[in-house]
Image (cartoon, rainbow, N blue to C red; front, side, top):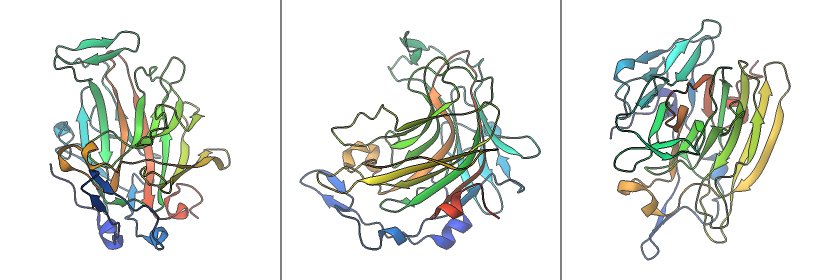
Length: 323
């Protein structure tokens, strides 16, 4: 699988020093059991995507497919992000004029051939081989964001009024991916009737005492309005007795003030090499944003993004107070 080269801005700032220790006897590719003294200063590649007032293009939208990077890719003067589409997910689009937005939507008329209802109560579907069917329309950074370091992600998001209720496991609008496995964190639209404009902040890992289906916080959004978020991720996978990572989230509406939703120490990410398929284990991650969800025939979903930044500080990532 081809992975995109990091942006020019990312190349200029990249100096990743994350170390991995492989324990053959335990089958672990261990991240450090304690943070190193210089962990807080490990360089974080910068991304600036869909910035208000700038120009960008979506390349080869018709070629957007389950093979990442074949079409629907994002390009501006500094950054290149790979596109990926699956099922009802349409290629990322540019919408609006002032401000412009990156729009991700599903086609309610799309139908998977031979789809089989997996769980009628949850409205989940599978194919003949038993695989759960998914819809996605996404853009992804490179695999170059470090563990054990404060990585800040800031963005504006808008959920239109006309989206349908989510069934199944929820519709992710932002995900953290470490390897070919399940995402280990992200932001999702809450599943269930009447929850279509509630965002939840979630994580996943290997802590045996944690229920990862439970969100850390839920934030209602006003439909059709822009909401700004800044998230601090410091990734630490579970090791018995090892240090926890940290997640913090700030929220600001178009007319309101910044509010800190929560800050918690939590394990998230994977330390066991075998969890990652095809020997794809890494102690780095990437951010994917757009729309990723269980297949729901006849339903319409959409998310709009702008001013998405990934950086090494809150000031550099936040979409507001940039004077």
